Length: 286
Image 1 (cartoon, rainbow, N blue to C red):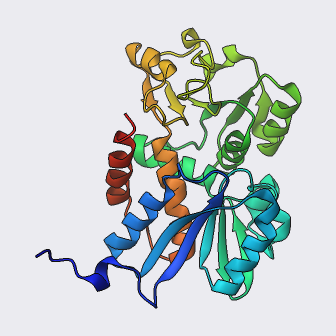
Image 2 (cartoon, rainbow, N blue to C red; image 1 turned 180 degrees about the vertical axis):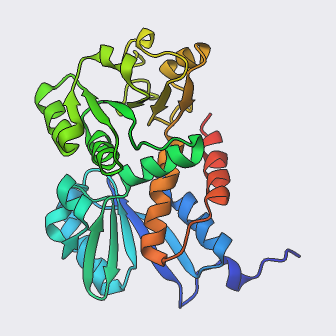
């Protein structure tokens, strides 16, 4: 007979619910992270996933209010569309025009964006790297690049340099960083202390070419690849041969989730246990 009992393993009538919405969501690792955190802290909460089509978003949000769901994680394709449907948004969510976390206060739904700040938390915790007064370069101009650029600037980075194939989108991302933002050529990576790949290049099932020429990056610099499928991209492997310090996207995934957890529960997330659960789940894919 195990030490676990039904009232500690199964949801109860008092259990509080949070979920991720998107299309698709069957691949989401968020349930693993948050349910681990709830169990670790002994919270009577549970986290699940709901597939929500774009045409169903309004109904889904009304369901959150009607059912008393405590909050949501928001993934593609709803991050931008959902902004105008909420009662209010945090400052960063407003600036970015994108939401990845929703909290419910009474009947009001409040949007947040934890991606960029989660990234800053991750590199500080995992690498001891404080972005203040540092020269940072982001490769890419999508949603992750936008949120990271904003948070780097808010945390007093000296430079936030953007490299992207689409010049107009690169300018938009640089503008989010204000006076420290600038669009640069790939060679500018030579001057950066932190280089971030915010493109899908190297992701399993995508183009495996390098997002930037590895010769532009040297030992002493840090390369963060936001990809975590696979855990090591071809670019990361190449740079590790050169003794460049490399971090994959697991850390950002973990720390942005930790910020969402705190928004919902008011408690600090148990990072260590969440990390172990996440890595065990990822290991099943390889």
